Amino acid sequence: MRQAGRSLPEYKAVRGTGHILEAISQPERVVEITLQPIRRYGVDAAILYSDIMVPLHAIGFGVDIVPGIGPVIAEPFTGKADLDRIRDLDAEGDTPYVIEAVRHLVEELTIPLIGFAGAPFTLAAYLIEGGPSKNYAKTKSLMYSQPELWHQLADRLADLSLASLRSQILAGASAVQLFDSWAGALSIADYEHFVMPASRKIFEGLKDLEVPRLHFGVVTGELLTSMSEAGADVVGVDWRVSLGDARKRVGDKAIQGNLDPAVCLAPYEVVQQHADRVFAEAATSPNGHIFNLGHGVLPETNPDTLARLVDYVHAHPIGNS
Image (cartoon, rainbow, N blue to C red; front, side, top):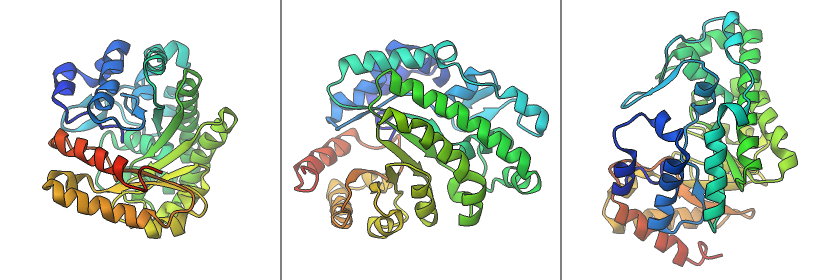
């Protein structure tokens, strides 16, 4: 997942105490931070150092990322007039630093680079709530009471993420992942009616570029079938559902996951046992499995534990196939 390097001492040294959006706007810094976990762990792909809020910040919506809190919106989305604040993203003009970082990384890497963007529901939830939320009450209230406005908002955010992802692929990214981090707050019916059309628009809009498209959400075990129908090639699975059950729900799609990040805080012998469980469950997946955590690396994780885990995965008969 995209936080692969944030527990590393070398990351903390380069990242410093400055603003994350400032760090992301400096291509040289992005390249270094992206490469750090590759050097340390020898994983099979690099993940661009960025944030799902970058496109919204770039178009001037008024996004800040507050340490210890997350994205915070100065003036949240409250009505139809706010649609005008979500203009189209001109990736070359608005986020040239992202494109430059991707190009530099592709030149340096001998493994694939994965780009990413936020899915419309998750982005909308931040815009409407004004920041992180436990119940997404304002978001659901707007969704239920003003469905036409909701679909207009979701559609604009889909265009924003699609433009960002296309620019990353055209700059050289080998695959992209769409993060719908908060979609697990929805019922299946609400996901299919209010969310799937916008997510599907993104995946359809990437189809001509012919790169693998990944889709991931948190607490989305009950939504996996619907998420797989949105159009991705690979569906990510968090640790709350077994990979065996996930495989049945996603049909002919490949799966990604799903070691609990907190397991990596335990003694290494415990980590290995849980990795074996992932291997055993993934063995029933006929269309491929990407060994991964079920969410991002926790900052307090011991880098040596992750290094040993990567080595173990690479040495395993399944991980080596």
